[in-house]
Length: 205
DNA sequence: CAATAGATCATCT
DNA sequence: GATGATCTATTGC
Image (cartoon, rainbow, N blue to C red; front, side, top):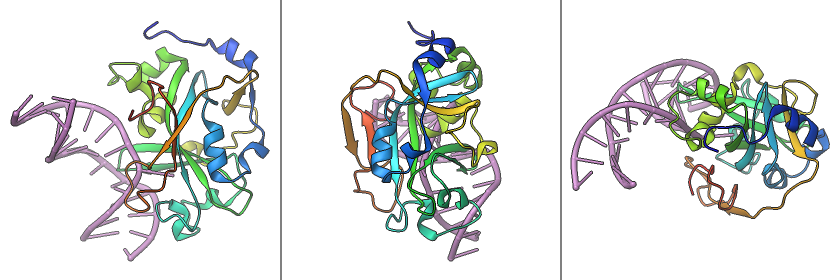
């Protein structure tokens, strides 16, 4: 029960369904909390979301959308349920999900996953990981493990295909905790980081 | 363990 | 030309 898949791909297809666009059209904070426990799928690899951060629109100075519409932030101002992938620190890709109705630029940063499916493939993509936690605990780590890059910028996660967000047909219950966001300068105290309390795959317990 | 340096580039000033 | 929603290896306790 160390490096083995918790959920085979076939079972994942059977027991989960794609989240509809309406799921992402609500207030960013609600969408962020709602994404906990959902399944991010890319190709034959997948993981359950255990940690996220909400980034609001013009009132949030830490958000990329704060400066308004630019070539990079274009997708944030479009319809919800799309992927906002950006490159940071000359090295890493980060995945966000666009929230709020068309025209309103909220988004949710995916910070950590619990790997469920395709773990052998994830290990090949992340040879530096020495434990299952190091595979997908961190925004740059999980994109590397799942093979997510800027190539997927603007992708629609609500359409059937290799890149989707899913929910369990029978949803389990779990405790949610909140705290300040990580690695930002502005709005440091806003409690917009949400995670599944007690989960080993959260990036900072 | 904790602290820190280095990698390295898109974006905006 | 500076900065950043990070990760890794290395050093020092």
